[in-house]
Amino acid sequence: MNIETNLWLIRHAPVDGPKGVIHGPDAPADLGDETALAALKARLPQGAFATCSPARRTRETAAALGLAAVENAAFREQDFGAWTGRRHNDLVTELGDAYHAFWRSPASNRPPGGESFVDQIARAREGLASLPAGDAGLVVHSGTIRAMLAIALDLQAENALRFVIDPLSLTRIDRLATGWRVIAVNQRP
Image 1: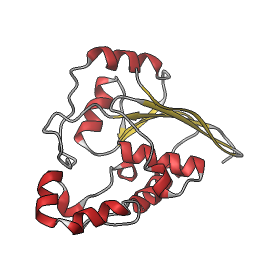
Image 2: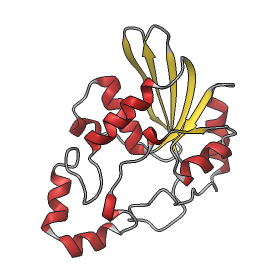
Image 3: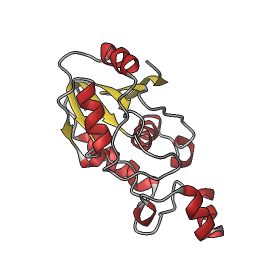
C-alpha cells in the first residue's frame, strides 16, 4: 500500500420499515431527510470512486447522494441468518436465554445460519484491499463501518462494537503507506 486511499464511509439512510426488526437486504431506505442528504452530498469529494453493499437501502442512499456506486458484497451488513426479518422482541420471547447468550458475546457468536462480527471484519478487510487509491465513497452499514474502524485502529472486535454509527453519518479514515489514520467518526450532516 504505497498510495493513499481516502475513505468516506457513509451509513445508509434509515430503513423505511418497522423499528426493532433485523432488516434484510431488500429493506428500502427512508430518503425523506432531504436537508441531511444535501448536506452530506456537499461534503463528499467530486469524482471519487463509489461503492456500496448490495442492499437496497445502500443503493438507494448512494443514488440520492448522486453517486454511481458499484456494488461490493464484501461490504454487506453482518448476516443474521435465521434471525433476519425477525423482531428482536419476538426472538427474546421465543429463544429466551439462548438469545441473551448471543448478545453477551456478539462479536464472536453466530446467529443460526449467519455470521459473526469477526467474520464481517474479515470480509471488510478483503473489500478494503480491493479499493483503488485516491478518494473512495462507501455507502454501507453501521456494522461495516465498525468493522473498518476495527481494522484501522487494530481493535478487538468487541471494542469496535462500542462505536455509534448513525444513519446518514460520515466516518473518515485514510489508508496510508505506513498504516491508517482516523479523521472523524459518526459526523452528522
